[in-house]
Image (cartoon, rainbow over all chains, first blue to last red; front, side, top):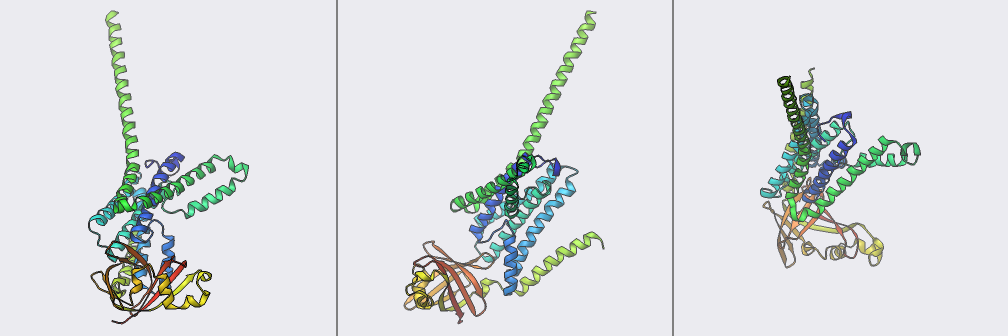
Length: 263
Length: 154
């Protein structure tokens, strides 16, 4: 899910990463809407709000919305910075760092919200800012490592692409095209996962409240651990193979010794 | 110019703009503090054909307050006094009630919390030093959006 980069990624890699991260984004977005009355995983609406506040001349709101958009941008910037600078040394670590930072942001929101939140406006805005930064990190990472094939924090582009693909499938030549079919499968998975995350957040909000961000963090931990477990499994098989080879070598040496003694 | 200088300048400009705006602007929590008097209740958007006698009632502030606010605690109030400690005193004729207030979102949502932990949310459409406009969705009798306008008296 995380180790491979750009064109070396398979459809399955993208579907797994896209589904899990879209589920997390759906939860975060609805969580922030229910807790703070503002979206945190998409910035298109914030651009519209920024324009409206600029027209009204509300300096405070302009500053707040500007900072949210800026932090989403910064998240994406930081994410790609790690990917392009550390990728050559260790792609798994390069791709895990943005997710670890995202987990830190979300756990901070959860802990602060649960134990210290007094519902002041400043606190609300800072916690929302952290969530927008986290979503910027996630979107930057998935887009960067998948060669812009996977974007999971908003569905405008996904819905547009799905519309285009579905219209293409009215022609037989496109219906039989495996690449297009795979792309459609990926986009449907992202959409459904995002929706599932959003619905889960809606249902669990009253019981979990800020604890829902622990759940989101757990999903992100699964993304990180999945590849780590695969790496460990690979190492384990490699190790077993080595042992088997050594045993075979020992047997061969023993056999050659026996032969030499017999002769 | 070296690339790192360009990047530092770009991010520095962003931080500078934010700091400048925040230092000039006043927080909605500070602006709302004080005593506000209800001026008028209006329907901004509604199913006019569902109002008795159509449009004429839709412009009567008293009637709208009765219909749109009938299930809300605020409908008995005429004066709203916002205290800095998050307390809101609703005052009407022979009526007084203390509840809690919070501002959420980007400063565009007013949350009112009652003793029984019930909450009501109002959209802070306009908040200036002498004028406050609140909007809320109505569903009792008539579906629509109601608007309350206040003026600051103290």
